[in-house]
Length: 285
Image (tube, rainbow, N blue to C red; front, side, top):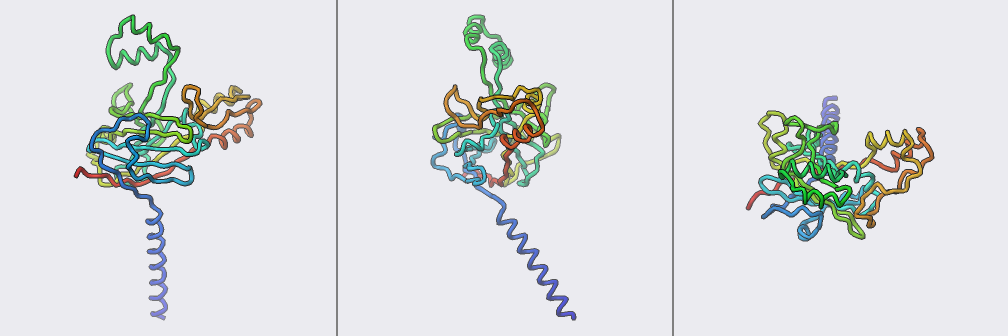
């Protein structure tokens, strides 16, 4: 009787350990490479040709990491345009868990925003100081501009503002490049500046960092526009645009009027994608 009981306990213990080992085996863990010098964030693969790339098969993407003492650099490549979803509108969120887990306590939302010439001038003056009238006239030759933004966000996707009216992450940057057979992104995440946004805790960067990628889906603005009927009959692309050149992306909604069934179809068309990996940070040799 006692032997039977011990045998059952042993069997259960083995099964538990097996499950744990399987879970650990499935946990993605990749190495970052030390960045000898800061990378130029241009969205191109030139600086990454010698780096090991990691694959996320479910969304046909490849990615790689580098880091220095201050920042994490990320290269991200889409090989299939259908997985872009609505990234041009939603942008990409990089979730950062400095404990090497998968908590969405802190993220950086990278987006490109279309602004008018006057709005662009106001932004430049805030960053660079007063602009001459001659340069303003030159800038107004273009009706609009695209500007890159990097906002710190919480688990709900809402901006984290350390100072009133300022939710941007100092030192963060990204760029995108459209090729014939791929769309590539390049990011710089200033980890030290980002950690300062973790309230007033004494958070420190560890040897491993959890990094989550999230993009696509419907924004509140997209839902509201559809329900108003603004999305009917559209043929424009909501993937990636590059001055009118081909960048893939899904076709517009093309629905006649707003309806629950149409909204469901819209959600299926513009899916939200996400996945996590654990990055082992490189040390300066």
